[in-house]
Length: 322
Image (tube, rainbow, N blue to C red; front, side):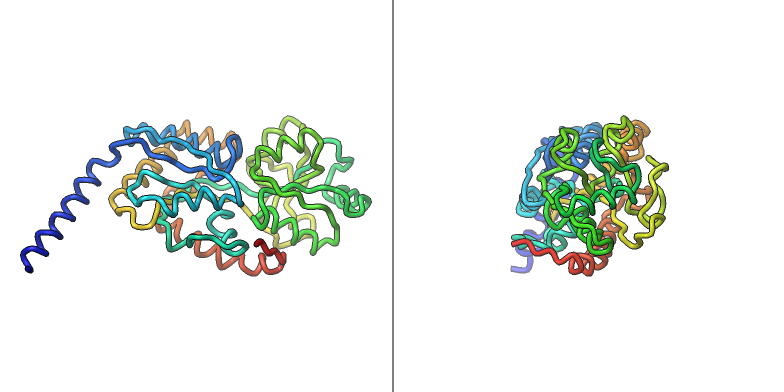
């Protein structure tokens, strides 16, 4: 009996080793839980294109949107742990969502972290027609609107939404919050004049601000943003401790073999070291994480720290999503 069990264990180990050596043998699907054209989709496509050169197989993007990104992420949580279904996600999908909505998966226990990818801050932007040239003027204009101004945000209870609600409480200004399924449709509505302003991922709006199609008023981080150093921080303007950014990572389903995770991590690290990839990320306002933090351990630690950090802020914002 012992010999039989030993033989079975050996066969399983051998099969796992062979699978890891031949991985990948078919296309890999990278789920993007937001619409095409947004910042998460953009960096996923740049990354996927470079990864497939290393892996020797196509990395196919599939946009699975809705419910603050939880539908697409849930697809990956319940996928086979074989390395052929991955998720790109960020601080909303893997930190905020479990605090504000009921999920049929656990964002920590049901995933195997692969690598940190890139980071971009949140900032306050507005349509060109808003008659204010700085944050003080914007706040005066908002007060004059008496709660009728509209502020767009991606999803309910995400970083931009929470930051906007804390901003309301700290400053006393009021406005209507309009949730969107993704950054791309929000941008189009702001350009069309249908939404007055937004708290959003800076990368989404950088090009429009540079072309003077939108106005930027403040960035939500301690230091000015390298991509738009002319835009002041909220701290500089007297509104402290509302710092938020959208850091991105790649996750696989729990139980994915360590050798497969290592293979994927290697492909990601090679992609992020590529000068052309880094330049394309920089062009859309994304800062690549340092090489020593492009690891599964660093992603796991970042996620854990952010969950602990944001729980009080979510409580302060008083957001409840059914």
